[in-house]
Image 1: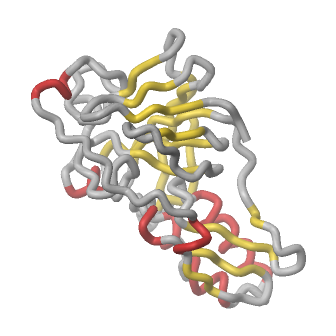
Image 2: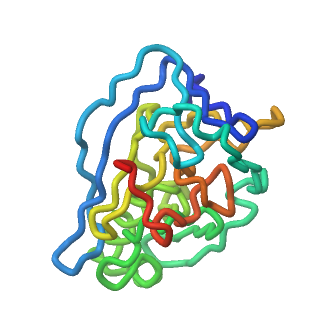
Length: 226
């Protein structure tokens, strides 16, 4: 894991340390309109430490322009809990699936084919096992984690520390900030959230699980071009 850091400020932006790269990524749907892969659109240039918008109102997204000062309530409501303490386990033959629903950001990769839960439970079939691993690893929020039955170890994508500014092509909205590679997230009160390989943090300002995304960008039709 890494020494990179995101600091949540009180009713203000995320302050991101200078050594964290920013990239642009889009979730691309299949013919049925279900997200199935990520498309990288390259680096978003920033110089040194940067401040990323958390209220959803900046005219310079993803960067903060001070719009939060008009009355944004950024109170953090997420519990500082460990994933393993809250996750429900679905047991299969080839893999088990851990599901911690409170982290869901409505990425919907889990809906492809028979769905990640059924695929994991029926993972004696190699194709189902492959599907369960693919769908869980594409989940940006880290709600879903697969465990190899033989080794007992998590099967995780290998991410370098970075933040991706996401777009949801199928829903035609702008998505959350996808935090990768074990970047530390520190709350406004100085306490730290569990450091994880992947998670999503809100940038529309409407999540009820701040600083984490809860999918509100879809219902509010968040668009970072506005």
